[in-house]
Image (cartoon, rainbow, N blue to C red; front, side, top):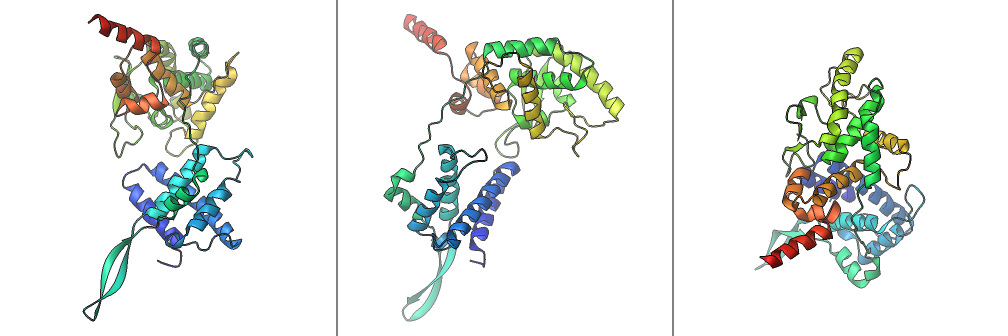
Amino acid sequence: MSRYPFQEKVNLILDARSQRYAPISVEKSGDRYKRMFNDFKKLHEQRKVSTLNPQKMTISDVKEYLSYRRTCKNRKGRPLCEKEHQHDITALRCLLEFPVIKQRKYTYRGKTKTKEVIVVNDSLKNCLMLYPLLKPKVHSRRKPPLKAETVKEIKERSHNVNPYDWKRLRTYALVHLMIVTGQRNKEIRLANVDDLDTENWTFTIKHPKGENTYAEPRTVPIHPDVIPVLSQYLPALECWKEAQHVTSRALFPSTRSKDGYLDENTIRAIAKVVQNDLVNPHGDEINSQSCRRTAIQTLLDNGVSDASASIFSGHTSGDMLNKHYGRKPERLAHEEIKRSWKN
């Protein structure tokens, strides 16, 4: 190991991940390891951990780190949630158990030889066996979609938006399109005008999550409810681009960014504008995730199969869809069971 063994190990991990995961995922992992190093450095200065070398960390070092994280607060001053502790353990496991090849000397028939051996630090596994209470209790529950009243009000507002109010027209076109197509933040942010087929009213998602690894572009149908606002938005978009001298082909362009596309924070801010416009938001938080859950759950409520909903949402199977986004209503499940009895 070099003078900085912690960072050297992290670089190996990030390099391996860059070959499989999206750049944004690798960047987030790097940020987590930077924070982890600062925590270990602080504990090392307080003489609570014995080393900053991941290969030499002991069960006691791991226990001190996990216990320290239990005392940390988030940006809002609240204790860290159990899911955040689970992420800490996953990152620490990758750091300690990432295999390292070392040269070991041994004597055979009076001669000194060397061989390569794989070294793995299993201190985390042993620590969790000795101190099981350090394991987080993660209960992942599927969040609900937007309420029908909220969707209805957004639909009415999008149909009645002033066609000469460019920003508000863009706001409602974007949010309403997310509600009916279930696109992720990245997918709608990087959409181009050419991706929208106004003849057949379909939308091609060319930049899905994991586009460089497991995902493929997909085409989804557009619900008739969003066609009126899109029919107003597209001509207004061309007029705005001509007035602003914008050459970007983005469906929802920006004049501030270098690439001509909105950034992720702007998408969140636009969704927040719609939420603040609602007379009664019914406790709903409008963002790309809640819009995506609404689109998928609406399909399942209308009897669409898990397989078709998975194709629509860009999932490889129905497991992820049922766990995080939506599930077939009991009413439809009961009807299907009763039909099987008749057969």
